[in-house]
Length: 103
Length: 163
Image 1 (tube, each protein chain N blue to C red):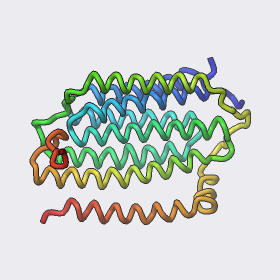
Image 2: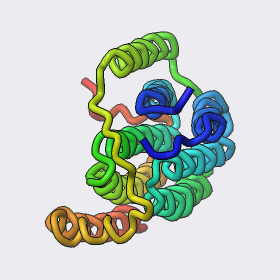
Image 3: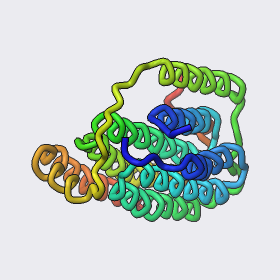
Image 4: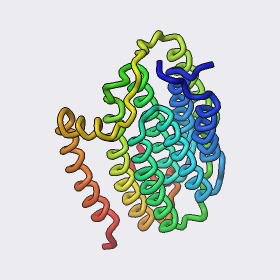
């Protein structure tokens, strides 16, 4: 069977739902960030697959993916800085302990 | 369509992308989770190569596997939190149901839709085309992203400073 657009979109969907499960379930803040990066990767795969199969000469999806990678890098840097700063004050990385904003 | 890629190449790269992702959410060791993340990034770079996105595959390896994963490992080393590990919380079953339902909805929708697939051949090398696009049509997001990166650098340094 020739590999078509559906295969790549299914791969993106599977990666996205695996990352979604990890974000909802994990307690360690760094692991939550890792699963968010997994979701970003899934979105990039979907965008590039659409770019390649629907408009192969236009490369719009790849440009968007470059911007997503850039923004994800900036967000990972700031997010990890926040996590390190929280760890200095609270001595824990358990996301369930970060409950100062709960009602 | 241009010459089709062999199915084994796609399934191999997909397995390299998906299997470490499953390992990432199932393991209890954070360091293993970080290594699984690097493996998954490499698999996604392989998928980009199969999609004729050569420049993007190189950027994926450089930025994601090379920089972001190393940054995450540094953060793991700096926060030696041996108590938490990578444990799940109490919401495993609702999360499994929800993410499974979302996956099923995605799969049903994408296999039922008649996507307007084009028969054109993709570009052989994308680097020059991407360079032209980034500096002509997408120059505004390009400049804004530069400012964003500077702001993120300054913010990360300020937030993680010892005071």
